[in-house]
Each structure stands twice: as C-alpha cells, then as structure tokens.
Image 1 (cartoon, rainbow, N blue to C red):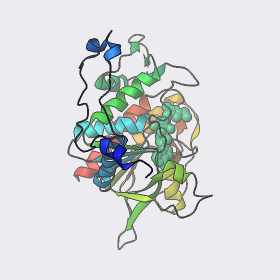
Image 2 (tube, helix red, strand yellow):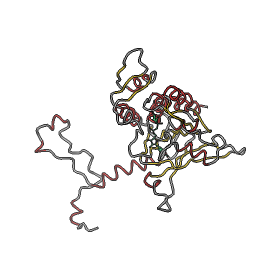
Image 3 (cartoon, rainbow, N blue to C red):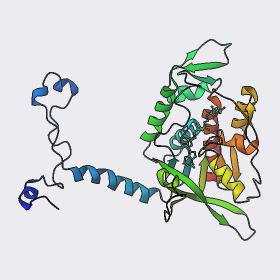
Image 4 (spheres, rainbow, N blue to C red):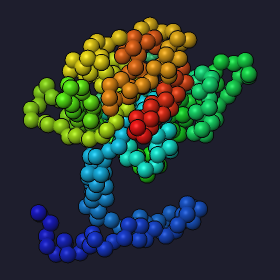
Length: 313
Ligand code: AHZ
C-alpha cells in the first residue's frame, strides 16, 4: 500500500505478460558465450504466486474426491502409484506424503551406503521402470542399483508425470474417514489430512482443524513404527476396529522370511484399506528385512493389483 500510484501504473500488467514472452534465445547452446545480452522474461511477483496457488487449489478441489489415496510415498507407495497409474489412467490417484521430500527410506541403500540391493525376482520392476543395475551372475540372489537415489528419483519422476496422479507432500494423514453400515461393519472412506507442520503442533496450538479427501480405497504404505510410521494400522487399533484389535509388532531381522511375507501379505486389511510395505510388518508381526528393497517394489505392485481387484468388483 506504500507504492506510489505512478509507480503502480508503470508495473507490467500481470494479466497480459505471456510467461516466457522474451525467452529468446531458445536453446542453451544459443545462450552460451552471449551472457552480456542475457535477460530473463520480465515478471511481476504476483504472477508467480498465482501460477502456484491456483494450480494447488485446483488440485485440492479436484482430488477432494479421489478414486485411490496412497498414504506414504516411500519405495512401496511409489511402486504402487506407478503400477496403478499405468494400469488405470482413468483413475484419480492422490498421494499424501508427510515429509517434504518423497522417497521415505529409499534415498540410501542401508546405513549411509549408496548401493541399493534388490533381491531377485524384483529386478523385473527395475526393468519395468528402466533403472539400470548390475547383476553378479545367474547364481546371484540379488541385483545392485548403483545408487538408491537412482531408483527413487526414477520411479518418482515417472509417477509425477502421470496426468492422473497428484502428490501432496508436506501433508500428513492424521485420521481416517469411516462409514458404518447397519450391521456395524466399518468401511474406510477417505483420509483426514493436514499440513505436516500443523499436525506436529496440535499439542501447542489450538483450532487447527484438518482437511479431508474422500476415496473408496486407501493404500497405506507408511512404513514401520516411527515418528509417523504405521499410521493407518495404529489408527485401526486405536479406533478398536475388530479386524485389527492389536498390532502384531514388527519382528527382528530375517531377510529370507521377511521379504516373502510382506509381498504375499499385502492385502485389504479392512474394507477400503490396503496395507503394504513395512507398515504390514506391524500388522502381521512380520520380520524386517533390513537393506533389501525388492519386497517394497513388489509389495507396491501387489497393493496396486489388490486395489484394482477391489476397484473392479
Ligand atoms: O514420511 C513417510 C515416508 O515417506 C510417509 N508417512 C508416514 N506416515 C505418514 C502419514 N501421512 C503421510 N501419516 C506418511 N505420509 O510414509 C513413507 C514411508 O516410507 P518408508 O520408506 O518408511 O516405508 P516403505 O514401507 O515404503 O519402505 C520401507 C523400507 C525398509 S524399512 C526396512 C527395515 O527397517 O528393515 N527395510 C526396508 C527395505
């Protein structure tokens, strides 16, 4: 309000500046060696704000009623999202990720090591998404991706390019929407969300009610118990859902049993809620597998298959 009227009159008209109006030269090669004449396309700050906010709020509006919500964008959730979005481009798929950075624990292979181990036959998923890997031979039980970030960034970039997928990151699922039929059976009918920073401050700030997304099907892949982990499984227990009276509790590490159990066990736990990845270890009392990621990719594939089966019923 302190800007003089004359100055405002000389500001570019925000509605008529086409974005990129003066972006000549058009290629990086054109720019090389010509930096003294370099200039960005002129812009008014509100154009930037509006370009972001109108898309975000349009997405909130569009995905308030989704077909499938995936909770947690770790290796399992992203693999599920990829498989689902590819199989059914007609479905609206919202991914809710509590962290600013999607990927969960899949940015490193284990401890602080770069290489990611995928036990065979999960190498099929790497071929599907086009991630190169080393194979130590036909007798080897595993293949190696040279950096876990290569897997995660590839599957993430593919998921984000599907036009029917929206990732809401920095957003936490903080409750489930439920419906009870005349016989007292509970069906999950959506998720209750909030900005993660808000969710983290419910103890010291008041009146921060959440937002909602309705969906007939939720795929929860929030990982094992941790600051946010195993969220939907824990919520089923706390709401005294008779299908999950108590958590099984993740067991100690046993690669051989853990990976098979997680893939095979990925299923609809209660009507409307599929649980996969390491969240399932908390439901079933399955072992952990440590730094081998094949079960996460294939649990994601199975979660997608289960989702499509339920959806197509
Ligand atoms: O931020 C979490 C992470 O990105 C997200 N998340 C958790 N709670 C959430 C909530 N709302 C929204 N309430 C939430 N997002 O879920 C993601 C979980 O990713 P992850 O990598 O922790 O789980 P995963 O099951 O996809 O992969 C597990 C990888 C592991 S753990 C393990 C072991 O401990 O032995 N071994 C493997 C391979």
